[in-house]
Length: 146
Image (tube, rainbow, N blue to C red; front, side):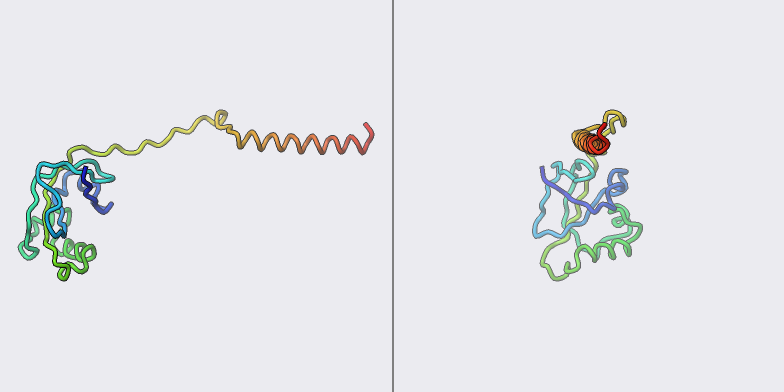
């Protein structure tokens, strides 16, 4: 299954459905409509549409669909992600998607009750301590002659 990675800051917006597009810089389209991709940390996404776009034709509505509050915010973030976009010879692609299935949250392992947490390390430590106490007692008995 192909991967489509997103910055962590976008994960919740995708899961809520408020981010339904992403802009990518590619030499050619790397995804096809009708396919499903894995988005690590998010789940699986169904690709609805992939289109070549002209950056100057993007609107405020496009910015909101991409999870931004405004075009200015989108420009700023995209410029940091693709600092050499005007020199790389690639095209802008807009990918329309929806969340097909969310990735379940990782389960935290339940801790055993304290009385069951004794593992070999603790048992070895107690054995060493007991041996040291016995040695000290034997030494004390030997010195007193008891």
